Image 1 (cartoon, rainbow, N blue to C red):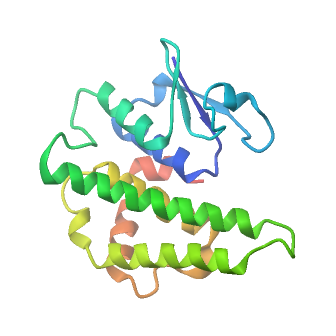
Image 2 (image 1 turned 120 degrees about the vertical axis):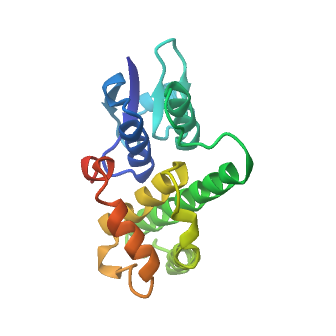
Length: 198
């Protein structure tokens, strides 16, 4: 059985959970709770000490979330989350990059905000917030990206928006972004989203 190093609050881990649920692979993955801030065990599997990290049945490990997601997709015999070729593939991967980028910026901002007073950088946090806001505005202006079958990009954005709700709910990212809000409201009702909510 594959083993997934994870932590419940990580949006990147949630993306992998979403992939596993969508592909029907959850029963093939054992979860290994991992505190990346408090233990070095993860470094034996991922030299960066980051999660998610997937330990394979045959030995070895895969990281990080885009690689794990594509590997899990390769195990699935049905419709793929990663389109094989052409414009649909590049659009899905671009959307995944946007979702992952929102997570990168939001997680960095969250970690900075947890630093002791006097050590925080307001400029750094503002820069991360601006990156998120710009990406959200872009997504809101391109609702066509969310048409068609669910793909890896949709799952990445879904995980990112879920993380904003989890960590920054007081900021109401939906305000003024009606198209993105409408998509996410519907997407949030997917069984995979409901079962992986932090």
